[in-house]
Image 1 (cartoon, rainbow, N blue to C red):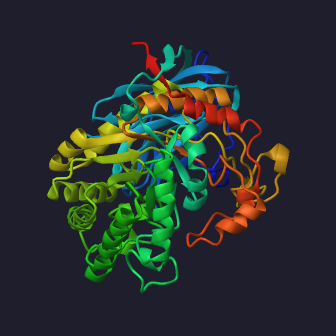
Image 2 (image 1 turned 180 degrees about the vertical axis):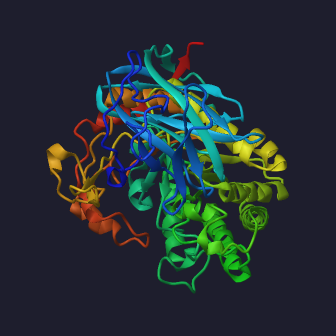
Length: 552
């Protein structure tokens, strides 16, 4: 789905079939410009990616025409969308797709509130079906199809259809696995010292750890300089001492899986920039040392903010190297980085987010392959844990199950053979949920983005920022189903995106106290906002340890 601000909506009259509510489902009716009536154009990829769409009168499964989703750069996702009303219930969206002769690719669809998995497309027409459960009627449900190949090329689409269907039966039961075999629940993200002070409560609520921001924030950051004293490095570092004491307090309470998180907030160096990569290689190794000394069992790498660099056609590369040369060089760089990390801290667990194989271009796969190669060089067998974000709004257990399988499959397909074998043996999935912490985009009459706000009934259209509303994204009962599925289909970890402090609230006096720590905190306004009135019910869900089984 994309923001309203980017709509390129066509003002046309929908043409509905008798039994198929999708307008112009075979793209046979064209407007004066030769485009499909009832459909809008869009590019769902990275902001600067080049993707388009067209009607092809030379290729069709039925009738005369088909729709082309064209990726001119690897991080593009060219395709088209329409809107239809859908009643509450489970719906099945089907479409036919093919690639160019001798080629393969990936495609996915969107049905009202959720994306499908990525489907493997060959050069022969093949039908794909995606189911999604709607928990309430949707007046303008978006339907889209897009080329999600992660490479330059074209996918053809034809003959879309949608119909009501039944959801597979799901049974919810207590998790009878030994505690050590159940997924550890992580909260994203919080202030370590405040988390530690209430660690016993969080343990009772079912949490095993939290992601900690603003310690090793960016790949270019020196973790020893966060406390404003870069000369003190090691056991005497003030921030290290604070983190070590807080992690020890957590461990005594049973919260044993806190995560030191770093993100690609700033552009990666050019792959041939030896000095740049020497700097971030050192930063990662020092962060691993910090994590080991401070008692962080996990290190997470968030890759989402520089997605444009995962496209070999990115302007920053200047067209000086082939995609293969870029991928090889980048893999080598990240193999060296993670070899250093693991030699410094062999017992650390490595987490990555989001599910880059699904979302990003081929150079993300080169980074991920490099991480795995670094693990292989050091005989590291703890594996890697890929955290999903596309599952944030998924609540149907079978949809979460299918998506996890898609992440496994697509990640495997995008890795070189040696790293593929390691991923298949040692890699796993950590499903993410986002039940609390709401925001929406505010646009002007022309669709231009103005800013963020909370729920309309509370904030109107006032620009409040994206952290002003801690209310629910979906009802509690739906979270209960989602969380049982997350626990069932995850590996060692599962996680909740808390969007700031949506699961907690602090007094002004507490905020003032935690501001004295070396670790910076969330904006004060978010900290002091009240939680939802029934927050205890959410804690009960996370403490409940339910699982789900699906009928075959």
